[in-house]
Length: 122
Image (cartoon, rainbow, N blue to C red; front, side, top):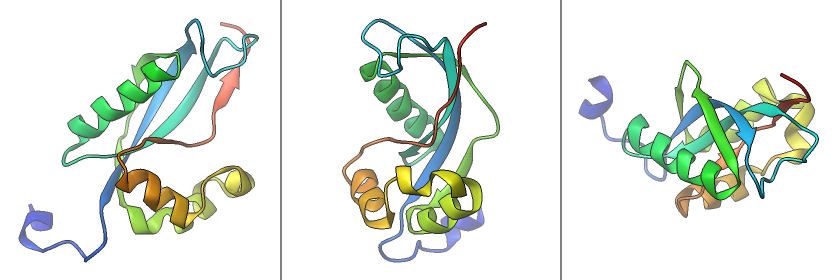
């Protein structure tokens, strides 16, 4: 409710962090020896529903079947990416987009993946 009362900072855009449990389909971006993975998708949208739809399209395009949408779904400002990945994914920062690339991806409607936590068997 309060977010609607105050204008967003100029240049800021909200991003939803949607965690998924995924399994590979044919022509998947996942290596064939992996059985599944957990991954957070970073997607923009006016609502989390819109962001989930964007993330589901990206997963399908990459040959990933969403077994489950996990909880909780978080929200952050696109401008908080660097702080977020340093806090949450410190060991993977060099594998993730930098602040500028993240902002460009989100501004162009792309979905950004966090690190994949994969596994080999059921």
